[in-house]
Amino acid sequence: MKRRFPFLSFFLAMFVLTSIALSYLLVFNSHPLSKYLSQEEVATKTIQNNQEQLSAYYQPAHVKFEEAVFPTTAYLAKGNRLFDLNHYPTLESLLVKIQHAPIQVRDIRINRNLEDYQALYEQDYIEFDFRQSVPLSLVDSLINLGNNQETPFKLDRILIPDSDKRLAYVVDTRTKSFIEVELSTDFDLADCFNQVNKVKENWLSVDRYDLKDKSVYLPVNEQVIKSKTYILEKIPENMFISSVFPNSDFVISQANTTDTKSYQNYQSTLTIFGSKQLMTITTNSISNREKISEEQKLRESFKPVAENAYWRQGLRYDGIRNNMVTYRRFLDGFPIYSHSSIEDYGALKVYMRNTPGSEVYRFEKPTVILMANIDDMSQDIPLLSADELVTTLTGAGVNLDRISDIQLVYEWQPDMQNFQVVTLIPKWYVEVNGRQYSLDQITHGDLAKQDQAQESNTEGE
Image (tube, rainbow, N blue to C red; front, side, top):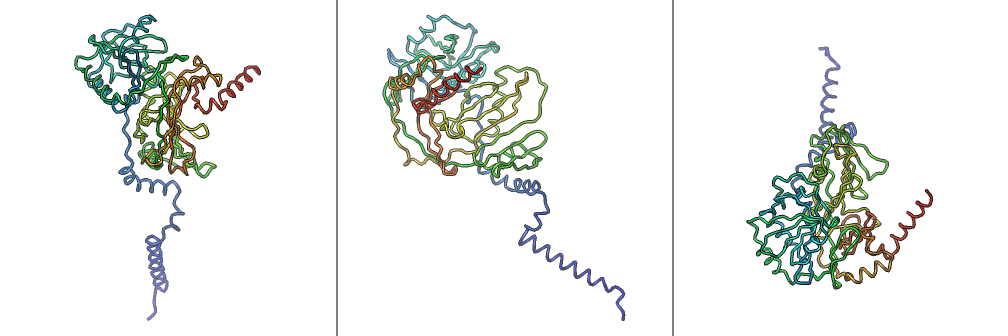
């Protein structure tokens, strides 16, 4: 009998063979198929699959803005002597006590009388120092303004006398002005000073020195602080992608350099710099909102910091300059700066638009964090006393009236073994003309070279 459909068996056989081949590829080797999918589709599917596992391991630090504007140090006046509290856990405990019973502002009366200002420092007291001057309304977790919400006053210190009058003072050392305030009836002043006295063995004897813009406390004696070595952890880029693009609505663009990758949609661009372990988020949209206050501007600037925070050792507001707000990483009460030869791995930078609404348009931060401390790699680092420090600075041609700030920091060292480990060395840092210099840079002539370059530019104009 003749077959009426000679080609039917052929097509059935081909269909079966094709099915078997496709099944093999899907089970054992998906690469030949993946080339037919776009890069963006493959990347998006991979990110979605990995996100749940990564989120379980890498938990955000959940930092709060109020903590970023907390004081960073505390000083004591006892008789005719001054001391650095030099015990960060006690400082944190005292700030929590004030939070539970905030200082009360009854009336905003700014006292600019120089004699009254000097009299504040002629009594026994504990003083809490902020990293930078901040609007009074920003420290509402420590100070209750009551009905006095609108005030231009900025403070960089809170001074609490050891007195039964139960008064306190919010102080702006740059203008030598202050406001008298009251301690809450729930605040136990005696317990505050008892807690301070319990860590008396940690106190450091200090002297007060007047600089260009403010006064600072510097140690009377040479001190020794250990360096720290930590294992570094790289935050996977998927964690930042999910924060910026929660709906996975992005495309990928590769830069000319192989280690730089950008993810973007119509609103935002996330760029990862692999060789530097840095990232940036750029916002493309512009709103037409009305002018906002400095307080609102600073609170707004903290939003990208909070959304992408994995650093657990503390952050502090580090000032605003030319619409760039900086927040700085801290470790054990000390700010972190990087060696001058590398990127600043201690800084988180927020750029605000120069418009009345002052929207955030760019955010930069490092993508490496500290994990385990390698304690047996720590070394004792001797640090100059106040007299030795001042002598060294003046010998390098830098008088105190040129200096805006002097601080003890941890310096992030450049040898990171491909971002596997980092050493942090305690060093003196000096601020001149809005720029930070290590004492090493000062003695090596970096500031002098900068001064010469500025003089040359001025003469050429």
